[in-house]
Image (cartoon, rainbow over all chains, first blue to last red; front, top):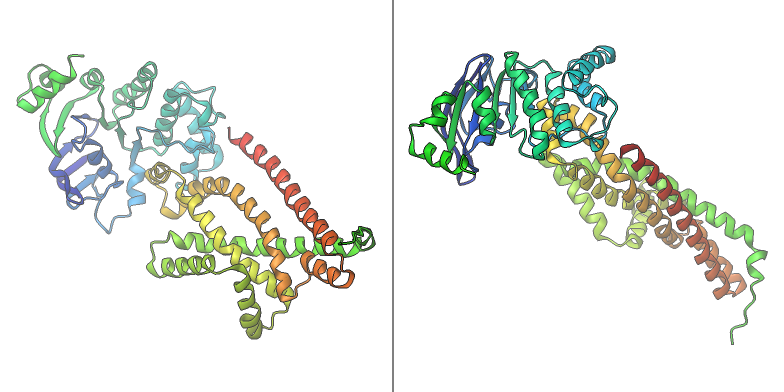
Length: 242
Length: 219
């Protein structure tokens, strides 16, 4: 489904991604974990071209994302992206946030877009918040609206860039539940996260990154109990002993 | 000793009112012209096209770097020759070009003040750059731009007093003429200052009222 091949990226002199390759099969859930500055966010942002790459290739559902001939706006219809800071449109209600792109980009009628939008918001526990503005919603609610907004475009792939890092601890569960449900429904997902318990539970594979490279890849059960590399072991010892 | 005679005020109220109305008229038409000018050059200042960027930046820097008085003279005498503008339209065009440069900066900062994440979210949903600007960025920039835009209008009313230099009929010109005939300089200028103040202060109250209403709908 997602095919990342030999991707390199620098910000000026700083080499952020070095020869990164990764395959994400359909309906798989990958957790990208690692220390700050490892390149996890940068990598996930290259998948939908929010960041360009210096070289290498990324294919999503067969479409080459960084090929100049590709219409990136069309490619992005298949890729849902959820931001750490939600990035809801503040001047639109929750429902309007969810319906604006289906209407303006896909040309759906207001009725069709609102019907689907209401279904999605309801399934995420926001049935009473259709007409609420983002400023009136808690962080957890805003992030769930953001998830609904991404799902409203019917993507085949969902990308989550630290979806719970900006939330108060009490609200982390409601968002993780929403993501968990998507995983159960068979969505192909890449999740950058620091929530180790969550990663262990829902992911098919842990991808551990450090210093711009993929250091180790393993099934969660193996990674968290018996990682191969020293780097992974160091990381886990620091992270799991709070 | 200066002999005060305030009767010159009520005796010439029609002159003052005519002047005030003319000032408001010139300022209003000028700001209405200045807004599209400002939007075009403001967008030009953030264009990726180097030519558009250069032209827009040059316009803004030059106009903001020249005193309004000099600009009005230049437009009246130079453009006035080419387009045969009278002092009425010469002053309106001059004020519009002047305010347009400041509005361009207001528009530019309004757009750039919209957080980067908004464009990223819009693009991630499959919107093209144009669609994202139209549906997500500009509506937010618009809300940010209204208060400084309103201030610009109030400033224009005060700046418009300079059009008296090119003999355009306005409150200041009428005042000058009245002083010349009546010799009541202190009374006339005091009253004229009061009129300008009443105009700008009333407008600022009206603007404050609408700003409050606008904030309510978003919060």
